[in-house]
Length: 152
View (cartoon, helix red, strand yellow):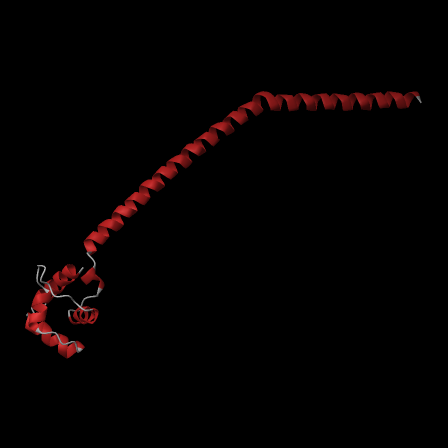
């Protein structure tokens, strides 16, 4: 993490056109953090001799270099790539789930079609036959009553 921090500090310092001495001066004057030019040089080293960085120094450096603290610690591109991979994985999971739902809906549609055919072939004719039979019974009963009433 300190290596990443040091790389970002050095890159930003160079973008601003500041020497290590200028950065040390600004840290002292602007943020009240005393850091000598040799300390900045040791912090920016690319080897195992790199100077450790204190939290107060990290905050002062981020303020002086006019960058937020998090880019000094986080590899933004790597984090971005991880987020994209996670989103891609989640999308694939959702696509699979949607395919399962679509297959289930197709099964339900097929079952509804079979039920409609069953209704048309068996149930509707049976209901119609029962309805006609009931109507005949009612007619017969009405006719019988009418004859019965005339006799009495």
